[in-house]
Length: 392
Image (cartoon, one colour):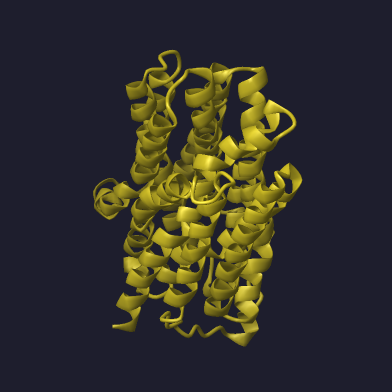
């Protein structure tokens, strides 16, 4: 019963916690455009948010090993609340630098939330682990609506635009703290003689680990480039309303998590490799749809495809990762995985504004192609290595 409760609890926590990035991604670059001294820095707040999460990933996950997941989850949720308070102060000052510090703190608060999927997987049997991870990600559907709605409904709550939005987001952060008190952490036993596990070089030499990490990294890189730039490209360059941009971003975030209902069934039918292949196809079609036509429906369809492609790559990579590590190695491999993919996401978000302003939308989309080509090459390498191991 406790195990089942943990999965459902993390689904709720996912809905609340992921409202933070959906909030920042929707309104972060818009506020950034207002406060930044240069329009090319408009996406820097989103990049700073993701960078804060990436930099905090290693210490957060390693601290979970020395303490426990529950305590770190609680501390990080409280840190997110403080980040909201700091953002309110930044908006009062109209300070771009303080605003950047605030979103970095928010990113640090998010870092632990990225571990919900692993905590849920550890609460069930290995056979049910992909299903547990998918169920947790379903919570992101609620976040798709909650984050942008908080931004819009709080915009004019105070005399300073969007200050009330961060006040509402702070209430969400403290709600996460309350929910996490009900988490019952399963006890894990590690043999003393294997506490350190294998060296990372040996672990990374496994093709399955490379596929897992590159799948997540590719999904996040492409998603971050396109999603971060879309509100700017829609609203400032093509005259679409903020309401239209909100609807596109909300639909995208729903598409990021809604496929999690069906992913376990897809994996049973065509395997993880098939799931990853579908993700690659979805992202290729996304590029074609929005490459040269900038109508509302083109934005909507392409961002939905972007969400689906990200889901397939991220869930597929998450499902594969445990195949390449032992119980005693889980924290360091999870830390390396998340630090890599969220670091890539931060770099992509930081470059998105510069690429959009200097090279243009089409170049930004074309960058997706070599990233996908790398993933295809790694998938082929993995498949051949499996065939060779069977042959021998």
